[in-house]
Length: 224
Image (tube, rainbow, N blue to C red):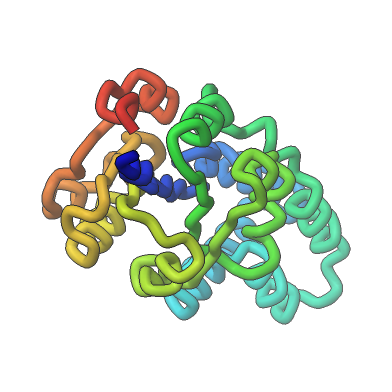
């Protein structure tokens, strides 16, 4: 009897912020909350510190920024309220429509993995509280710069082919350059990065969709 060839192992790598989760709306809500608590000028100072912190670290760090904000004004009682806001935010309410359906759909065709940049405290909390942790069977990788950690991704989740779904064309392009034909890049045109002028300075992704739920109708994925 002939041995049947093994099925193609496909791993779907899914970004979080503005890919599965409407992070832009969370940020706008945080801005309104901070303004209400400490005023417009102090709110602007928080985001100035946030930008500095992000430049230094290479990723968004909301809680770390709050710690730096505290150094400047250690007696402001509103700091605790801002912390509670972040830690208790109902992230599940900010999932894009169809996000969990897409994960379920991809689970039937391969292995789904959350691949995100971020800090080691708030980003995992966001993944867990949004329901994404359970949706992908607790398969989560979070790095400072994920495009530099592809060897580690392969070590944890070896595959014949990868499908990377991310709202940042810069990252899609960098990972395509590293993996070549071993990866299919999918760009959901969502969030503020979708309208960044730099998008046109990179090679176009393999697949572009207008929203994450459009992946449910991609004919190419149906064969995997």
